[in-house]
Amino acid sequence: MAWKKLYILGAGSYGKIYYAVKIDSYGLCASVAAVKCADIRRSISLQLEAQILTTLKGCPYVVQFFGANVNIDDGTYNLFLEYACGGSLHDLIINSKKGMIKMSELEVGFYAYQLLKGIQHVHKKGWIHCDIKPANILVFDNASECNMHKLKLADFGLSLKVGNGMRHPTRTPSSNRGTLLYAPPESLTYGFHGKAYDIWSLGCTVAEMMTGTHVWIYHDATDLQCKIRNENPVIPSNVSEIARDFLYKCFIKDPRRRWTSKQLLKHPFIQQALCNYSMPETQGQTTRVNSFCCQISVPEKDFINSLVETSLRIRNKIAKAFIGCC
Ligand SMILES: Nc1ncnc2c1ncn2[C@@H]1O[C@H](COP(=O)(O)OP(=O)(O)OP(=O)(O)O)[C@@H](O)[C@H]1O
Image (cartoon, rainbow, N blue to C red):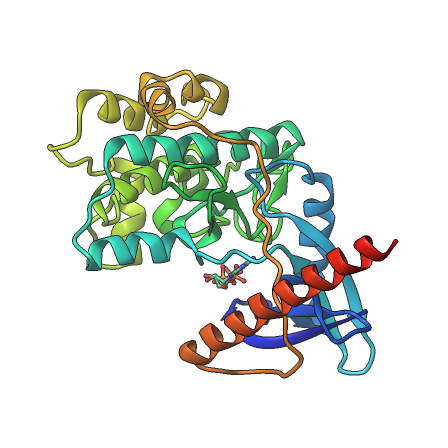
């Protein structure tokens, strides 16, 4: 069965990411995926990401990896991931802001729980993500009754093996690896990248969910670097004491004293959210169809998705009829 790329979901430094479907021998859809695609000559980071994702398999809070291949015809390296129908957490934050809907602290706590579980898994497997931020967190529909989304960590293109982050491997010692806005002071001052790196970035992400804005107010990159090294992130006055304490624990300047994912999972900010929401440990799954391709607009995407749903219903009917005959 062949994969068919239907439209572009986004683009990164490596290349493009497509929405793709797998068509079976009856011309019907068997499954859908998001395919990260790069020119084979510039695919080293995608190949590394494939290796990392292989070691991270089995965690419901990390994007599922289906496999990778080389397409000799068009000279591309393709990495197949589960498709996130809700886009990224960045989109979710922007949309909440547009709709003037502020995420409640309980909601944020529930999302922070999922991110911490993902980070804990990544760290246990011996990796540091090094680029946790809303744009690298994918949003899925939740199978449970509660109206909350399911979040998963994605984009492991900058990840490092634990122990390899004492000094940035390719740049100067004081250079930071990930996105500056989410970087901890030790990465700028000493070029140090340990597990605590991800906790600082998580703190920035959690604060952003609460306020809709970044934790730093700055003029330019130099000013931002200076603030990260010498000042404390801005935590708005209207957050609760519990939420404030959670953020303080993420923003401890000394990475050795900064709380770990295990400690933070026991924090009252997380525990009170868990009392409110239940979390089934299920993987998000979608199944869609079509056989035509490439760059299409948003209304067309809806149309394609409805075709896919119809196709699925037909496929299920055929399967039921077939079982009935046997
Ligand atoms: N599995 C996925 N399912 C659905 N959409 C996705 C998926 N992965 C990424 N996207 C979308 O594609 C966009 C680009 O993602 P990607 O991680 O490839 O690049 P990036 O993080 O923007 O770039 P870079 O890797 O260079 O930092 C994301 O913001 C998201 O909207």
